[in-house]
Amino acid sequence: MRTLDRYIVGQLIPRFGLGVLLFAGIIFFFSPLREALELAQRTGMSQGTMWKLLALSCPGLITYVLPIGALFGCALLSGRMSEDGEVTAACMAGVPLHSLMRWAFVVGLLAAAVGAVVNEYVAVPAQRRAEEIQDRLGVANKSRTQRHLCYVDVDDTTGAASLLVYAKSFDPETGTLNDVTIVQFTGSAPGPGSASLPNIVRAESAQTDDGSEWRVYGATAYVPGQPATWLGDQAVSLGRSPKDLDDLSGKRHVERRLNAGELRQQAEASAAEARVNPASARRRNTFLMELWLRLAIPFTCLPFALLGAALAARPQGGGMSMALGLSVFTSFLYYTVLRYADIAGREGQLPPVVAAWLPPALALVAGVVMLGRSRS
Image (cartoon, rainbow, N blue to C red):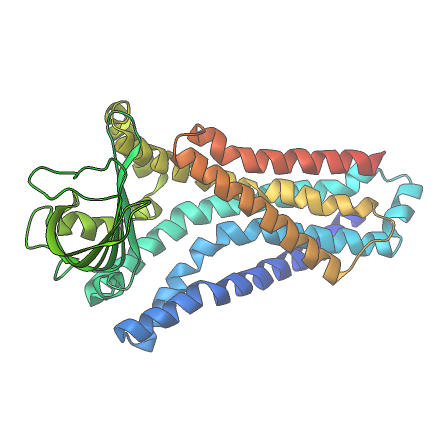
């Protein structure tokens, strides 16, 4: 390794590590730590269990933090080298700019590989272990009663929504929905033997003993263009049993605890039914999106590193504040696009492989273009 290469690597690695630690701390403080404290307050778990669950949540952050760390480290180093005139001096000495940039490419690839390995072999087992602890201590059921619950029934023929039910909380032990809103899109009851539902029904609670037949309490009907109507207590069919709702609320992110092979198997198992059942199609798309995102998100380290390194051509350079601002802005923009692409892939508006790889592909194009301009 040349002296210049050793110098750049020695300067880049500490800055990359600083970026990872900085943004991991920010995300950890505003997401896992806050959620763990709220969970401990609701369930009364011990501090030891809380910190164990927090530790198990950390590997899942690595995939998202590594790209930001690569962007921050490369931006901080390239900005300092440009500000100190080191880039200009190297170019005048006959060192081409792409030779200075190649270590950003190498670091981006290495960080992408590390992120993919950690996500598959560390984060997934940690997620499973965390859920085992919650199940053993009964934390999942206790916390589930505090969650907002929403589901939509879809017409198998048209794929359009036919019924939407939202409850502020659901108690799986008693089968009770609290603060319920029911939106009926077809204007008729969703099941036989039940009362006809207006467009919107608000109820204080809904409860059932078995099956999908529910009784709403303190219900009020709202029909567009008409005065509100007091319904009181009556039977309705929501199309879901308490067991269905329990599974829905407890396994909403079941794909997060599956490895790549299991995700592929689940997607293949749902392929035949997905052709005729919109709900199965969304389930299949969910598994495929998770599978492709396991690779696409770590790969973002490469375009982010190139974007940061391209700042070396800026005559004014930049310091910590510039690198931090660029990292926050670029990450916010990228993950916003990724969020919309994720929704489009899960809903079938885009093929899952396209939806997962579109954001990193756009970031890579932007990085290459900026590098090309910096060489001109």
